[in-house]
Length: 440
Image 1 (cartoon, one colour):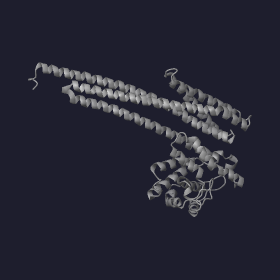
Image 2 (cartoon, rainbow, N blue to C red):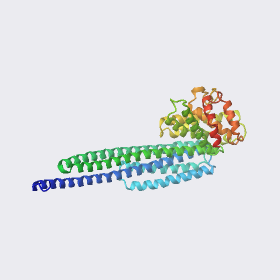
Image 3 (cartoon, one colour):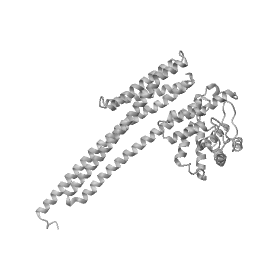
Image 4 (tube, rainbow, N blue to C red):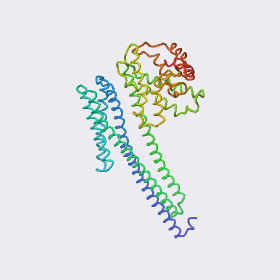
């Protein structure tokens, strides 16, 4: 067959093959250049976003410890002050990293200006808080509140505004780069078609190679999307860990360990899974609802941060006046939840966390607080939280009582079914008795 080919045919085949090879080399070169730009964009965007979110996370932690001090109007808690100082050092170290990132940006660009604004506002915020702490021994509560409202709160708003603006710019930058990648992808496809027309005798090879290159691009695009999802999950985990840390801090103010929030969260999850297994509340107990309630459970007593230490740590029975003050933590807890995560978490999660904090002291018979809800008027998440919270409180030692035995605690929960607690929730809880004993 080959011997019968004319010289002209061989020339045509040679030219076609050479054209195909040159076309493939050009296509591969274009793909490599596109890949380099793509990887560079991914690295820059995620490094910038990661550093911004680290500062935001450290500020949440710092603000919460400052809130603890401001609310109690006392700075003699060495542990809180130590954590506050450590957090401030973490923020200042992150700002140094931030400064190095700015050196690589175009001077005067909107992104560089916002990075610089975040750095400057965060530094001023830290310095003003140092001044605020130094004023505690000499100034009145009114003067401290005025100083906070006049100098610190505007800085907090400026920092949050700058960080939000910077996040929006990064999202726009990502969107533009994705459009550019798609445009390059379209151009690559056109180039591959041209190559296929020219190289008649190598069409199969060209198709296979072009397909492989395009698959590589698609794989890189999927990698980019996975990185985006992983970044969101990391931010969510940082928020959750911060919330658990705050809850632990609140519990430690009343002389309790942070294990209470972990144990009650575990009990709540056990009840929810048992309910789903039994087919209870099938229209409510989605996987998302179960996860949200479990993750929100540690926030049930956040409102105790507003209760004075003298009442929280009183070894004896509270007076009527003191008990009224203690009851205020439920309503305060719902508001604090909205203040802390209202602008950064999904609405369903925020609503569930607020319901748990606000209504876990309501009773099935309507004699609870803060609103006197009864029966199914009480959100399901709060009814489940009530059983878990009371049981763990009964079997734990507190400043005002010794721990109750598990047998007596289970018996008390059972007696209060239909009075204090939702009888369906109590039934599910008692079905878990053997597991709870085993984990004792």
